[in-house]
Amino acid sequence: PDDQIKRIVLSGGGANIADFRELLAVEASAEVETINPFRNIYVDDDQFDPDFIKQIA
Image 1: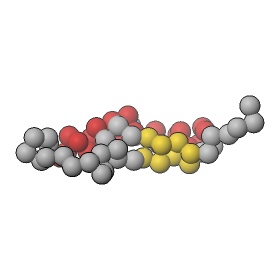
Image 2: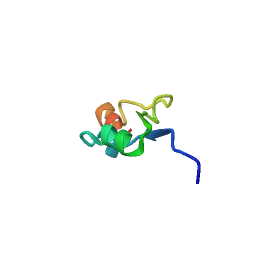
Image 3: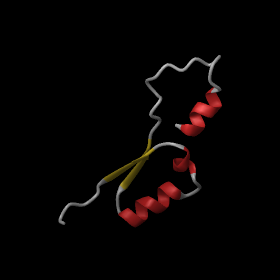
Image 4: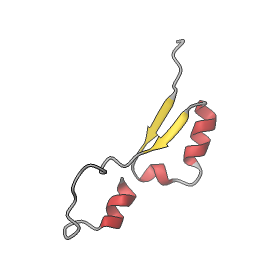
């Protein structure tokens, strides 16, 4: 009950909703960070569209 959320990490397409990150930070009184879960994974550009990967990350 005394624990408080200090940090929220977002990823995926929903993280790109306009003003969502800022609103969540205010409402939760916490730091909100957006990450790319694919940043250390090799993705073959011939098999996957790089823009699509960025959108879903």
